[in-house]
Length: 452
Image (cartoon, rainbow, N blue to C red; front, top):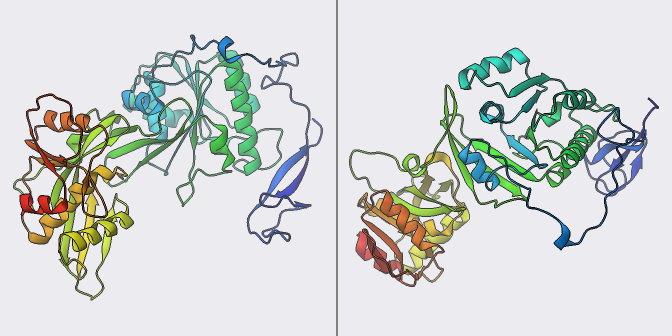
């Protein structure tokens, strides 16, 4: 093979350098210089032994494009299917990122062992025996999953041509390397080249590819940011090692919503799908405790009942602390200012700690009312009834604002046995009978009277 000519370019200003250096002398930016290929052998296709497979695309009218055969692949995992938007689209490229040891490989191996399609699981990090040991705990009787330990893309494509799999899993993209790039595996050039080859293969053969990606200490996918632009879907697998629950989110999805949420429970036999997450997000306790309130929130199309815990205490060191886990700290400060201005509660000299149980992060403004209720309950040391829940947004003037899809929230609360829900007076509810009581309030003062 002819020698490949490469050079180094600054990603910020485009200045060319003969060798790598830490700082660009033109724009003075650090760590922006990367190696790029400026001359390489002609590649005709991802098929290394086929030089006649050049395919020229022709323009088509939108009305002429046929999408009737684009049936999604059922992965036999309701949570994964939900996050993808109903299943995996043929020819799509899916990138799954997460911290080391969180369960990325276990999740995709579990899917590979369940699906009734021929799957090639390519691992560049573990041996076949190591993967077999994990597979024996999950589903040792699968006849559709093939394990390949290889890191060179050209060799992987040879095995793909021989095996003809219907789904391909790569663990992980940072371990692959291509002959067309001379830099080491995991470098920016190698990741871009390997991903480009996989994209070309996936689109030409309509074979879906799932990639596992490492993350940096900042929580971003390791490698160039363009990697996330190249793929069709970017999934984030997150959770706390000290907790058994794992959360699957979609940061980007060309074939579905990015608001869906999948929840798993880590067990010795693999990851168990949690079909009713409200049960794990509401803690069990013997008696009623102050500072606890339940919020009816939504993650995509899924309604969730989430417990909010607040602790208000006198500031010992003079400067009051404001701490929020699973909630925006700036929004907490705003709600505290509204309480002090509109309801007359002097919280400026008190510490306020807020926690969303279950280890999840919530962005839905509908939990504002539950947060206010939990803070008032803790401040006055008066418990809120355990069968009360809340669903409303708080405005800057102290008004209780309505939230979207209130009927779904009410039905979820009713299904879980709640006796009353507090909503905005201005919520447009359909004319139907509910078993739980609906309390409509218009300002914070009404909530203070009911709770205290």
